[in-house]
Length: 413
Image 1 (cartoon, helix red, strand yellow):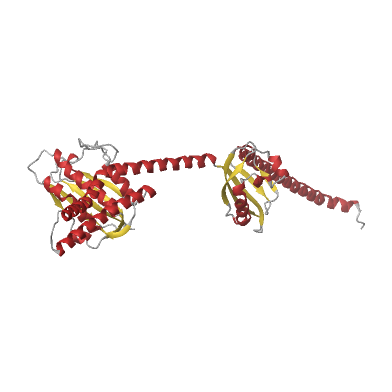
Image 2: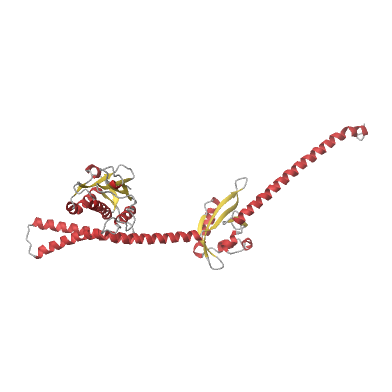
């Protein structure tokens, strides 16, 4: 039978039509999918451009070598003061506007770190209008499906305001540090005058006795000389500490035993304590015997002297004159990171509304209110702090054994 037999054509036509319909349906589905992908791509591109046009950062994209610009966002024109088209025409102009002092380092860093995602530089640019702006520029690699470097992309942000703000903060801190130093000298004046007067008085007495023809045994002369030498050395140390603090704004710390520091404070204030009829209770030997800390001896002594003197002065307001007045110095070394030297008294306490660490805040009729503020500054210059642990009876009126307690907190390391 011939292939063109009408009967054969009638038998094959339905199958051919079904295949054609199936093919048309496949093409329609593929066309719908392509249209959906195209719409999705257009939507993604529109979202990307809307985002790029409205963010403050400059988004950029180049080839792997960075010498061919693929895209630059409109924020470039506002920050650099140049048109985007000028950069498309000459991609090298992006670095040409970098400040002369920064350009070489920026170029080296870009070539070295951009492909690894490590490029992150802050530099200055010169705008055409003569204004200098600070820019933070970052880059990260874009890889293709095989994991090969395909493009470089990054963000550049104008951080001029942030840099200027940080500069103002730094200047403010410098001013505050200077003010603190002046306050320290003002508040330490009386105590340091006492420190300096002792060796000077000792030296003067020795010279006066020598001029009067004072005769004594060799041991007595030697002892007097040694004492004068020790006191003069201490005065020199005080002066050196003040000089270093004035220059550097920080204490001169070295590891040393805590016990002699506390003992010296007691020895210096013992006449005043006896004269005020105040009993001094020092720390237990086992808490300080082998304790060493990195501190500035002179400044720590000033802090402790101020705390003990304040505790002693507090009894001037006590109504119970027949009560035993006591000052306690304790050392709490239980913590691994710091040590607390606590100074407390059984006086009337400190009222809740008194901000004791505020400069010029004082409850003394003749005080200037700088002692505790400056003492806290010195404590913090050591990396520690000065804390009020308990306000005493003023805050615990029902507890007759309550003590006003301060803690000088000093780091172990």
